[in-house]
Length: 102
Image (tube, rainbow, N blue to C red):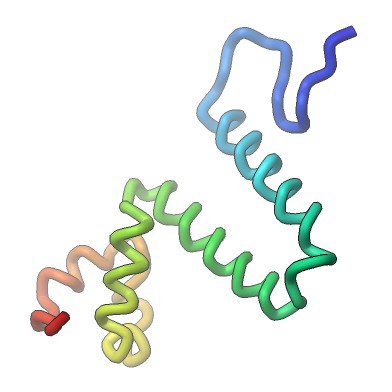
């Protein structure tokens, strides 16, 4: 009998939601395997925060890498008004933000 990894199925048809759920479950399984040896509870919380941000970016078709870079570049503005810098509307805020020296 053939076994399938968690989140996978033997069906030939794939749904986007199934693919996303499979990717998340396999990512979490990989993280969980090394968690007791490499991460503290606070480091795991930071990892969860970044995974959540990246997944939210993917859900609203924002480039997660560019989003995280812009959060770093505009850290003062983000701290002052975090609601303006959420992944689905940060581009509008960025269009009105003053340029940042690199």
